Length: 449
Image (cartoon, rainbow, N blue to C red; front, side, top):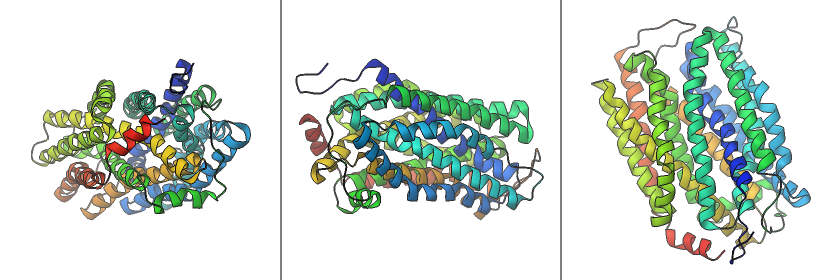
């Protein structure tokens, strides 16, 4: 069924399938970001500096591979009319690789265990990219309606937030119920299977066909097509830089939550409460952000969401003096801002892909999505790495097994500052960058389709 403007509407099954893909992206995004650094420093006794390298290097590999994956995805779309092939490969490979990541032999020296995790997590990241890169390109394939893309992405972000809540709270609960290193392995297997299931549903239900007419694939190489989108100007590099910096900012408290719970709040179950406080409001306000975006524009809504997140996170600096239950209030407010920071860049991306493809006269959706996903991965990895660097600079002491080490006061303050001030400052930087974009041109682009 098409509208009077020629836009093809999205079926309910496609909506559900596309949203289900965020079970995969949410699970992969939250669990390594939440527990991998903590697993390295507090179970495998890996130093904070070496652990930061382990969590960062796989994402640097993504920067190299993702534009290639995106180009192959574009070629599949041109040749067979679907992006399913790479998505299916990633969906099937990720579960066993996820298990291996959290199954490092504890009897090995810390440096050897770090290498195990590095290799396994690198392969896991490649499998994830095989799914995520074409998945990100799907909204531009499925509809050319400006506001329908926002609704499509809003459903995806709602599932993303729910997955973050379930995996963020349930993953550590599984780990703690089993206990020790085996707990990490069981957690890795359970979450890996969940991630794989969500990816398979998206592959089967949302990526089975192309819904709108498409252009020829760009004849340029994957790197040239992707990076020319950055160097040729336009709105894409601005939106990309904002999204990457905000991904970095949101990944920092994610990595810091176990440390804040254990060494500052010093309460059993505090990490689960932190997750509920952050993610539950995001689920509630998702429809509100979608409505606000339609009323005031996606960019204006993104600015408001960013301000809310930054101010709320900055308020958490007070935990350095008083670590009472009040900390959950600003975290709830930050969660509401985080929801908007997730929705609107992803809702803007298909519009900018169309703008770019119109300008060059070729379909570059996969190549651009590959660069987007690669840079997002680096931002998400830099979050734990940046937090671990703060810990190393403030004298944090690593440990192994169930051992609890008394941390110096400087390390406790490092945890608080890294958790609150650093992400707030980064998001405030993005507000400056966003001043270079306006809603007018993008709204005009959407209205003309």
